[in-house]
Image (cartoon, rainbow over all chains, first blue to last red; front, side, top):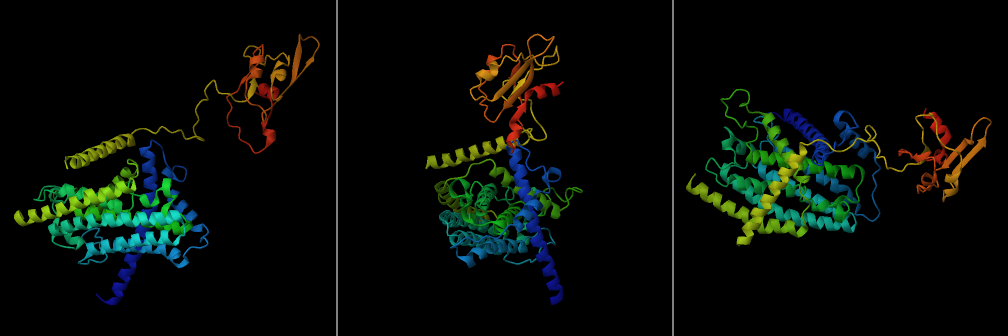
Length: 337
Length: 146
């Protein structure tokens, strides 16, 4: 492949990812609002367009046309930079996600590592936003975000190592390929010799919720205590970027769970079954959006945790369990596999 | 140590039961009212501004212009005027004005009215930026109801 074709491919992928992230961010807000309404027996947005489907573009226009207001006394360069630092890594993460056997921007050998590396840059952005805002609530919020993410990144990485040991690769496409066949080959189920699959899956899912700062772990932006947390001083598109980054991170988290545990683009049924047995990008999206729906479901079911409850959950339960899980899986692989 | 595992299991169970409950609710019908498009009938004991009762037999109000409502009103927001007319027994009502801006909905006028000619209306869509919108000509109102 020569350089020209490579560049064109790069541009197409870049445009595609930004479009995909923006579209998802916009319409996941709609899903979130409709979901919240459903769980509270309401209707949700309904006035703008059929089923309120024009609500996201209207919200977007509103955010974009708002004045960019930078309060006095803030650390101006950092204040402007923080939303950008939050959004760019989120888009970067999409690069290695394999949506199907052939649809992947960069099939890198260390795809999983790259996603974890870029996902943790988001925390830096939230911290900078809180720190540069010159607002006591924002500073408290960034302190919480950092302690939360340190606490949850450890079990998440330990669990990722477990999966890497089982699949024998850091390449996301190869991790999915190990789960080919049908649903009993998926990593989250206890068949296929991996008895700890369900526990691994639940631990990883909890950690990914906490990593993306979603309820019930959204301590960084808890309205009842910290106004709006790290984005208290942001308005217009600055806030919009944080918002988009949050939803992009949810998509990344759900994609990662799909890839690591739910067999990516592979059909849950054996290939011999016609039509439903065919594997493709639609299975990936079906699984991913189902996981996103459970994220919404969880948000509107559970109240927000306390700070100490959150840290206790990580240090006293998730970390010991994930370490035990790592050792036990290693033992199983050694003696059974 | 036993408490540690019990705590985890109990917690997980309560989380699962919570998820089941919200899932059940998710499939139930909406209970909210889409207000401007849908309204419910106001309850009969609601106190809106007062109005003259339309008698279905005579097709008009039954006010005798005695002025008891005006006298009984602590805020002085009612103005009643009646006049003698030839061939008609008693007074004929010619003016019944209500200044709703000072009315406290105490109901003295409704209590005082011996023929039962006034009642509380069920009107609640009364928001307006102009004061004049709260001056009601109740006589005209009851005539328009015909």
